[in-house]
Length: 305
Image 1 (tube, helix red, strand yellow):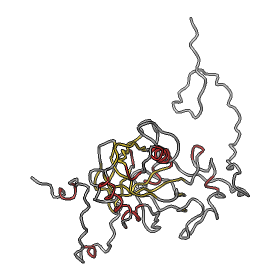
Image 2: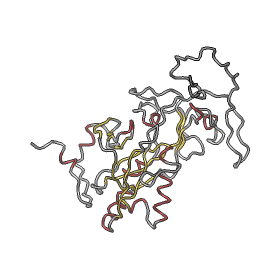
Image 3: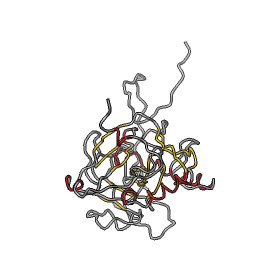
Image 4: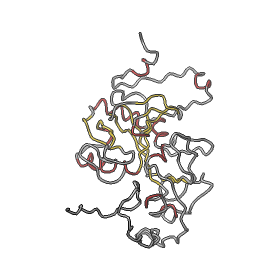
């Protein structure tokens, strides 16, 4: 028995089909724009349509072609804690270029991102920054190059740093592909989760080179309206989200005192000085019932009888 969604799930060839507009379908839901993205929340690939999850994959890898990417790394600050399973309120402050808050921000934390107190190491939990980085990329499925364009939002740990041979963060992966004479849109990229990471993190690996015909199809998708929307940071302050932006690190921002802005570039970032605490006295009772101690004591070998 045929599934009613089969016509939308069939992997097509690399030939893009023409879009047909009947003039009324878009009016039924009041919007002509359908936002589709692939979420990595919870270590699973999830297909999101207009903010609602419609499909969850059990696969630990996804083959795509990156057809576009935001020109800058974004920044986003949430003043409220994320509660897993609940909707996340919109961010308090955000920046499309990581230089200054966007004009639409009503509660700017500073005039520039460099001078922002939320950009200081220690302003977030566990010594991190309360304002986090992200970058948006537009992808198409490798088995449906002429099909839908999806947005993927990558957290900082999936953008910066060093990875492994099979799981490189975006910037390292980009340098690797370019060093081999290719670009991101000329290869099939395998996106997979980093199993050794304590937070949600994905990396990339080049699988194969596209043919000239396939590359031409991807070029047409890269300049589509869907691709342009996918790489644009847009915040609806009147709408709650699924919490993916916040979930990446699972950390709650904390308030820190204001600090003076650096006067010029090149000065090391200011850090919040940790409060000195007196060293606890050694316990008289050698038996301990604390399982989740906030400090690590030096272990001792048992004495011989």
